[in-house]
Amino acid sequence: MFAQIFINRLKCLLRNRETVFWTVAFPLVLSVFFNLAFSNLDKSETFNPVNVAVVNDENYQNNIFFKAALNEVSKGDDRLFNLMEVTEEEAERLLSSNSIDGYITVGSSLKLIVGKSGINQNIIKSFIDNYLHTFSTVNNILVKNPAGSRALFENLSQRVSYTREVSPSSAAPNNVLNYFYTLIAMACFYGCFWGMREITDIQADLSSLARINTAPVHKMKAFIYSLCASLLIHLVEMAILLSFLRFVLNVDFGSRTGYVILTVILGSIAGLSFGAFVSALVKKSEGFKIGIMIGATMIGSFLAGMMYQNMKYIVAKKVPLLSYLNPVNLLTDAFYCLYYYDTLKRYAINMGLLTIFIIVFWTGTYLVIRRRKYASI
Image (tube, rainbow, N blue to C red):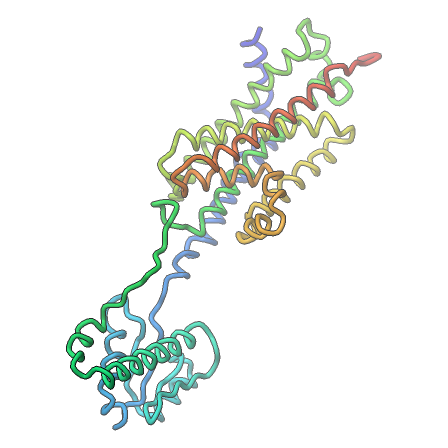
């Protein structure tokens, strides 16, 4: 009996081209647009040397210490400045044409001339302030202890930092991944369309398939068998999406492949249960139910950072409870935990809360449809 209902239900569901499109084709198309839009996002945050000029006059040539310091930070692939030594007239012309971010003049004091304020201008100013502070410190030490000048100059370039950055993971931060992770979470919850389809077809007052209700099979058994077919279809769709993201768009999921697959399975079950619960609870038209499910899914995706990445962190900071009440965010965060964190504690919390959502949705669905009877069919 299970095999017969399962196979027939598969054939029936696969004929619904509109649902197939929204649950597999739409996420694939959206992932391509995401890749086109965000492929250079990390590259845009790569540091580029600041274009700066110095007025090459007698004062500059005589100030050998500043000249040496400026040339030192303007060499190599990791240089701070793209340095140009020019006349004052040429420096003004370069600044006016935005070819440089500022220029320096050397006199009784160092002066920085800029056309506007910004990050690059602050970098130049910070370098000058750091040089002046270091020069003043060295000068004071030499005045008090001239005998220690040799040791001082030998150790001057050896800066010691007393703080260090500790990362919770060996994985490199990636600003693009969260967009794709929210896309996967959204696709998981688009399984709600399959869940709605099952509830609609199992209820005689919502569907023309009255024979399902008159068949000599327990209603809940028929529902569970049919639901297995919907889940299989959606898992295959999710497998296609994951394969496309990983092998075509090169989206990194980390090394925990088994946990990624487990997350997708739980996410698909959550999506189906959500659709079944909404369809069973709301006694309105199918279009109205679809509107509720799409609206809830897209709001959850927005709060998880799909449209604006920082929204996820704004919600976590301002309304942390909402992060745990948003199942789309739980899925997104679970994928990020698998990629970024070395421990599974936060991942386990996300999956535990998602499981609670699944239990609540299925329990609510069961309580609504188990006693629903009809005077006539």
